[in-house]
Length: 313
Ligand code: APR
Image (cartoon, rainbow, N blue to C red):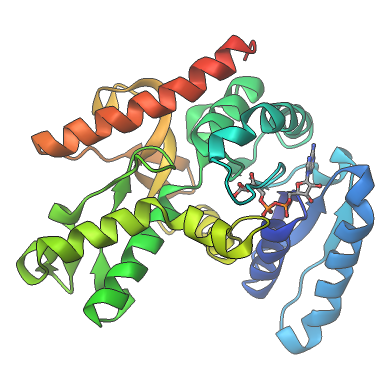
């Protein structure tokens, strides 16, 4: 029997998620949106069914606004919520998206209680926290997709600056999904060669700064809405690692209970993603300056969590 993938939110990211999941034959796909948007959700699903003959994939793809239709899903990917517009921070979305995530969490809890859940809605570190609190799912079953995207952006910018294949760049970005995130140049390698041995500090600073502001750079170019291709593929990479037990080590927002000295917050950390879900968090011995940056990002995340808690989460 095919696996079942539920996509909550049929907007910009949701539609690319559906296309990628279909092309990769990850399973049958249900795209769920609010009743007001169920027409486009069904239309996008049908369009993808009609793409299948040339796309060489077999999958049933359907649109719905009824949570019953996600029953028994293996993976749920959540993009329901408002995206940023130019001039907005991710935190500006907090109040609107908390209410949306609460509804989504209740629907997923009722109909897909065993699914591995990947949250993309911003502000990410807070929304995955809310989703986890409301569902009460075990921590290995819920992660936030942010670091996988932030690391992809970091690798892309390094490849552009250095004129090397992006495939040979290995590195990670820790912390919250925002301007305080912590790229780790000290641990970045280019085909095994340490970045710090082949790039000057100016280049590294430029790439770190661009990575931190990468989401905003796209929002400013779009004017309306935020990135969708790269967030979608980042989530699919995580979902594939789970479904195929690939055991990828990917930076994800995971619930830390002692790791990195953090207790009770979801922050971006390197995670082993296997058929167990978020099987393990890898800890890194950080240098003093990296610890200080992690502290700053934790304070930023804690601030949004305090706001969630103030709203009774
Ligand atoms: N249940 C299901 N879907 C919902 C709900 C809800 N309660 N509320 C809103 N939606 C749907 C909207 O109708 C819309 O179709 O979520 C979809 C969001 O799509 P877009 O507005 O196109 O936003 P998108 O670019 O996909 O980003 C979604 O991911 O990266 C984050 O910051 C981004 O928070 C934003 C989210």
